Image 1 (cartoon, rainbow, N blue to C red):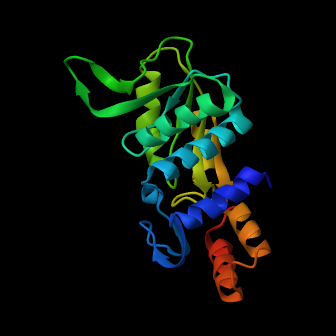
Image 2 (image 1 turned 60 degrees about the vertical axis):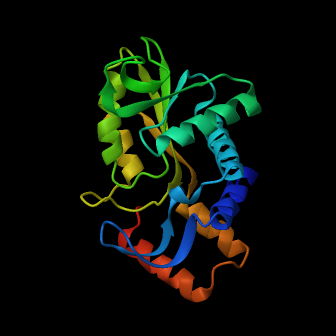
Length: 220
């Protein structure tokens, strides 16, 4: 596993973003872990987060794209932080863009905040975590309405690697199949468990509950 992935796992735990215990998810599932990306709130946390996203995007998609699109609202700070990190780490100027919840009809008009899009632009979408693919249902048509734009892929922070509510495929796999572009995460939950167990940071009782959870809800 790449060093930055190991660092990111430690970073999620230190930032109180990834927690282990007993949690009830929106889906009603009882989960032994929970991720809350809203806990990244300080300048240093956002600076590091942008760097981890930039490294993962560079690893998976290179730098041959023009715009990083972060869906409102959580995607806005993610996009901004990652564009800054891309410039710092790779010397590549990527533009950020986001959607407004309401179309603005004066001044800087339109549905987009940040960079506009034009024919030929290549776009990477950035989100915190995708569990159902619902946000992509809203984001995809907004991007496509801007012109002949190519979506290179989606990057999220954590792939929970569990079945959707209606299929046996993960949310990221469903997105790949439905929309025809790639979808990746900085780390997968499998990598998280592998790394933390190698550091003896997960006790036997917690490991057994994680195993049971994935026996019921995990994707193969």
